[in-house]
Length: 81
Image 1 (cartoon, rainbow, N blue to C red):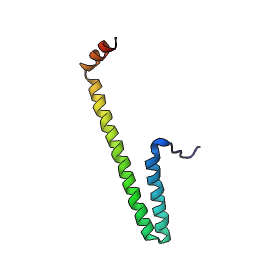
Image 2 (image 1 turned 60 degrees about the vertical axis):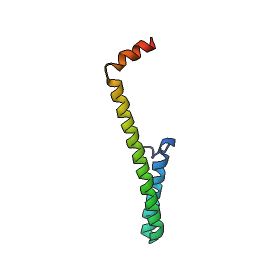
Image 3 (image 1 turned 120 degrees about the vertical axis):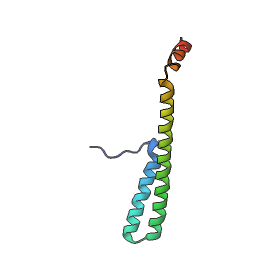
Image 4 (image 1 turned 45 degrees about the vertical axis):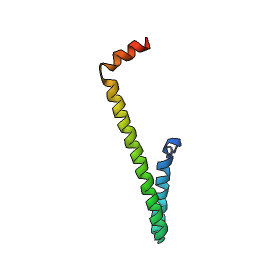
């Protein structure tokens, strides 16, 4: 079984997870200032990742509903011929 591989598309999520781990380790060691900063960075990065995902999901829904309309498909076929 292979480990988790982060490719170019998951860079923001990777850094959010890294900051979360740093926050947990620093909190466990009693370094509360470092833990608080790393936690804030992790939350911000995760929120940006989530907003980007939701925006892409909404865009896919809009495009999918536009393509699913019956009037659009014959026009596209006529233009491509």
